Image (cartoon, rainbow, N blue to C red; front, top):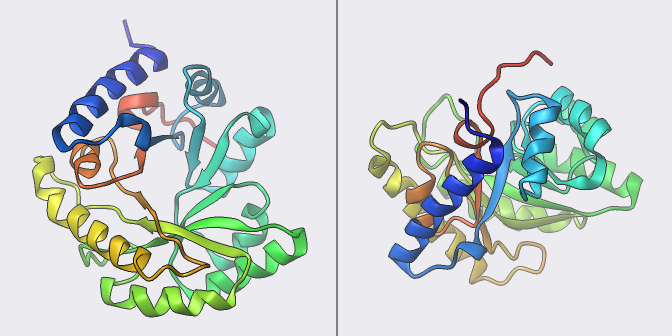
Length: 233
């Protein structure tokens, strides 16, 4: 018999507690984002009923479809790469964007936020590993990019986000998470008004424990939490 989302969440929290206790953190410091890309609206609702308040989508269609039914019963995160031309459709439907990585996108996001008289919490996406298959800024580009974002007063940089290379042994991801933490701390120390940069979005189903040990404050969990139903959207 398959475990329910509530049971999966309980198991996840126990693993989080073990990881936080190893490094003297509190599990309350970490926000779990249920990544619902591959699951039904019903399963996303089960996650909310289990006590998960953050839902992450990385496709516009999935976001709009689920939000039309669930509404504001969750905090909505867009965690996928966002094309500038689709910003107008996403902005207004999310509370957090995890993939800000270029000024052309920032300009479009700013424009849509001004139209709606809103602000938006954003993570700057960093390609720590340098993999060509991954989006994001190179670490050495982050400082100048965040300084340039001061021009866009509707965007608030709350932190940095990365995706580590997939590894059978999660321990291999540690250097990438450690590097992002060091970069985040360096920026936070500058105390930019527009970029407090106190948060770290890193860690997924296969490596979240290492990410937690290295300072993650948001972890993006799909498979081991809500499953992988491969629904068509």
